[in-house]
Image 1: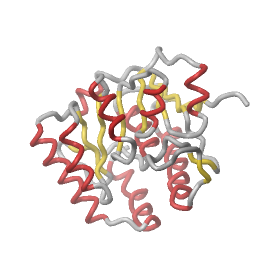
Image 2: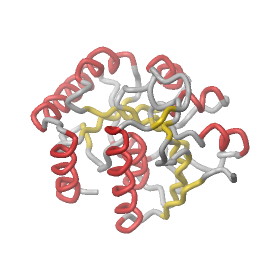
Image 3: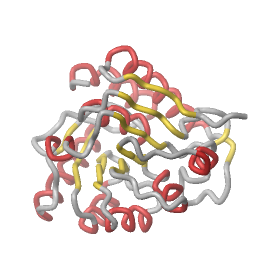
Length: 235
């Protein structure tokens, strides 16, 4: 997704979610400075070499654990959306790539990074403090933002960690994307937020995010080059 295609979505998101474009831009600049300071950043072409033709993108929905118990994912690139990383670690799986705005369990993100996961860290107006605190802890980091892209901070499209991960996979060469743990229902998976100890009824801001994520994934299905499939456990 190019910036001009993403911009109308972003304008709506800012308006409906009450975000600040100015803060989002400032966050992107902070992330860029941190990446340059640490000299551990990745360029898109470098990360593209990690992404194969088939990619599994793991969301943190309540169905995730059941799927992880039953299926093998060794035939594709494994991309975890933030909190889903913790579920994968519990299942003995190290994702190839983690897409995060640092809203998940950071110690688990660090464990996975230390064991080989590449990090895709996203900047937005509400996580500037987390960027400053946590980005220096990671190695092999590609930066993303939701405003105009900068030279080493990319915008592939997408809003939540999950749908952004799908857009990333498509942009970096995947031609088959299997979405795992993308439930979009009335229950939020316990891996979604560090403060959740169990699956939780959905709250209003999350409902709005789910709606945008579903809309964006439909756009990707229609306009992207990759075939997209939802993988959910049998009842």
